[in-house]
Length: 147
Image 1 (spheres, rainbow, N blue to C red):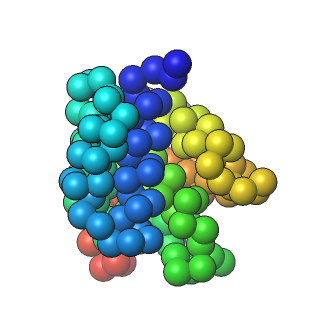
Image 2 (image 1 turned 60 degrees about the vertical axis):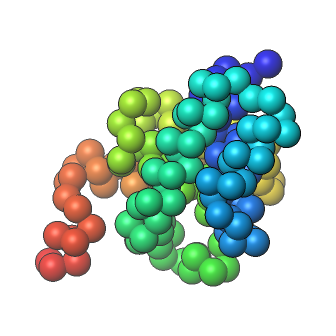
């Protein structure tokens, strides 16, 4: 049985994916998953934090993805990969309760489980770029657009 945070990431990924495809309200999707699967309250709590956090910072997160993966427009990116990236970027740049390398490793594991053959390498590369940029120059999106 996966740990609480891994379960939460799996549920959060499924929730964001459904939001991305069907435009269902993330809170309702998450609630449905929690009820259908009888999830532990701590799993639901962390999944909710991830979903609402990623959803709340979607424009910033997508700008980071687009900047780090210029050859892949968001509209052409595999939806599962895009949503794995959204979760991990939220954890790395906004949440800060998990070490960045752990968030990257977890995202790569999600990509291996849910993505295509090349997803884990793609996710690792994009997140590595974003992490390295954040280490070198922690500036906000708004500041970076001014330069």
